[in-house]
Structure formats: C-alpha cells, structure tokens
Length: 277
Image (cartoon, rainbow, N blue to C red):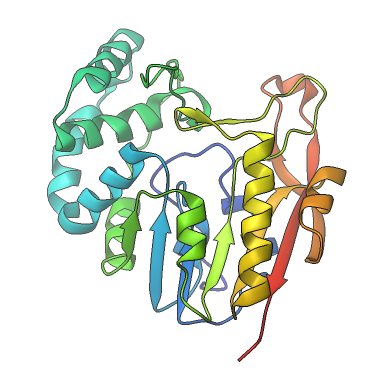
C-alpha cells in the first residue's frame, strides 16, 4: 500500500475494513499468496501487496460481478453509466430496479443492477429475504457516486486473481502451504439485543463461528500457514480464538443505526501462525 494513498473498493459495504487498514495490514506477513474466504468488498486485498490472490465469497451475486469486472471492466463501466443519473436517484426508480434485479436471470444486467442497488441503497447493506430476494431499502443520498475509477483499478489489480464462490471451510482447508489467510466473517454480536448476523441467504450462527475457529486451529496445527481473523473483541471471540496472538483496538466503525446512540467498539485481530518448514 502506498504510504499516502489508500485504495477504495467500488462497493459500499457494511463492516468494510477501509478505515481499519492501518490496524490490520501490519499483521499480514509476506507470502506468495493471500486468501480471503470472506472477501466482501475487498478493502484488505486492494491494499495488501501479494503476487497471488484467491478471493472467495459465499454471495454468488458478488462473485459473478467481480468475474465480469475482471474481464470486461471498460464495457461494464460504459453500461453502468445510465444507472447513475439524477433521474436514477429516485425511490420509485430504485424499487423498480430492485424488482428487476430479483426477477432477471441475465448475469450482466444483474451485475449492473447489483452495483446500482449497492450505491443507492441504505447504508451499504447487502441483505436478502428468506426467498433470496434482495430487500435493502432506498438510501436517499444526495448524489451517489459512480465508481468508475475504482472499478478500473479493481480490474487492473485483480486481473489474475482467482475468484471463488465456495464454503469458507473448503477454502481454508485447501489453502497451499505458506499462504496468508485473512478471515473477516460476520461478527459476533456485542449487544444483548443483537442476533447473529444473517450472511447471504443463510445465517452465520454461533455454530458457524465455532466451526470457523476450529477449522483455523486445525489447519494451523498441521500446516505452515498464517491465519488472521477480525471480529468484535468479546469474551467469546477470545475463547474461540485460543492460542492466537491478540491485538485489540477501538474501531472508528460504528454499529448502531441510530446516530444518537452510536459508540466506537473494540475490534480484535487474532493471528494464528505455524512456521513449520
């Protein structure tokens, strides 16, 4: 990462790591390959220097979009432009496009609409109902920015990256020796009223948190890899990530939807390392 410049993702993303780069990147060691089982919008990989990348997410819409951008970014940006006009920043237009997104099977059109909905929808959320329908409400922004430059940079940087749409356990278990694996799962809730995050169309439950932790413990015990996990700093996360080196800090990212009740929260970085040769 350039010391004076940070590269932004072209998607808005709840829980994105752009504002936390200075805390996370120093914990990612040199390696031939960076693997992200929970890629999301990609702020870490966009700012980390590796020769090879495997970028995985369980969200099929997200991965399909990235593959299209990877191979045809200029055409994609040209086709995206009509969705970023003053007329498109309208609630009726938004809900019509959301309905179209949920109905279409056209991969290219669906990818365009995904970017439109992401930049015009509420708070960078990516949320689906139980039937798999995208259901984020209109965001009411003054002038949503068309991320042309960010899309071009993404395509250039990840021209040779491997994008996958697999279960995180499979991705971690198949990681080659000497890889760095950065995991940014849906976070453990910190409030009494919060529930475990719904991720894609299925829930990321307490069992899933425990399964992730055990998968990481197993691979690090057997293989020369480094695994870094981000999560809320809670007694549960520290118990799950036993054996890791911990780094805790206050995040500028805020979790409450009510601006009057927003408070900084503690983030935890857990680093698991097996340097066996």
